[in-house]
Image (tube, rainbow, N blue to C red):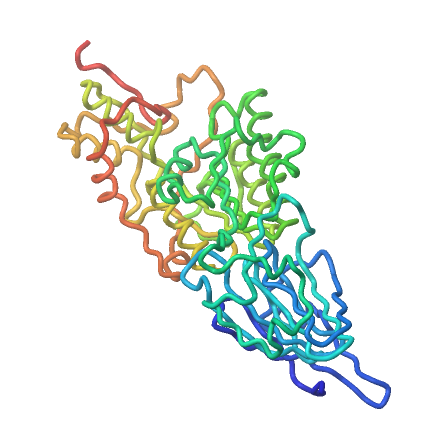
Length: 487
């Protein structure tokens, strides 16, 4: 008999994400009424905001009608409209709880949230039983399903009505035992721009996991038509956008301006629409160039942006777009160093070649190694940190480009006094092409990141370790001039 007047409450089960809810049912002599799905009340009570797109009803004439065990690649919200059912759920997802079992009875005053990849089965305990389920994806022949035999000895489900006495399909009877089940893999992570400096660090961090995909501009053009149908996006949990237009000075030219807006805004907006539409977590990388650098003291996540040049303007616009995605992380960083052309690699190569550079000494910030960014992204995503904007750089005292150049010379066994300081104005005095304005203060406050338990390593020890790696080659020269000591 349905119990009336219960409070909306949740009960967790041994299967992660499988949650039973008691529903308030109001009844009198005419019958009963309940709110079967009420987002405003149920999400605060602990039901995931899973975005249902379809509502199905299964009607069963006879007691003992048995269906399952089916694991689908979507989430389900199952409740009883009339009658009563015995339900059995088996975790068929990859991971430590594979094979875990939970059983309970459901009547109209109870419902259960079944996460993607958890096998579900139902046996009716009363005639004319109907149960309804909301799902957050449409059926597709391309989706990946998994099945388990109802009589599997490992699961050892204690069916109220023995399986040899029930109404059941031949197909369900023929499902494999647990030892032969293909586990449902995790939802996919898509890393965009995987050939860049950050992309390579993300490759190193995420490795060759089968659920991680890496794309380049050649394999996924964010500005091309048809992006929204280029993947089965419902299968993705996270998109990490490591792609960006970063030619800061070229962005000041007409051609560069067009390319910067296309790469940093148009493409980002396309990914943001997809992430919003499919409930995907969107990770996006921002820049210190969104600030004008006039603030005294480090920039926080709440400081207003005021970019000086085209590149900074496009990054600020991209950030604004991403901030509208319900599940987003914006990683604001500065002075990035990784596997590719960069300032540190150039300084090391010049030191080895006997070249004495002039380096700007009126821009202040901290180096950020791409391995630190990749590690911080994993920390935020894996820990399900609150969505929003996070500053990410390496730690330690702020320095100038001149200071860093001296450190590189010293750490590679060369005289740091070979580096000459110049102002930004002096450095660019003879420039023949448009030069983007640089923020003089690029120091980012790291308190919010540290409050989440992530403390980035200091920049100088990280620089020391980085220089001990493969032999640096010449790269970026945007902050130095050189004179050759060999004439």
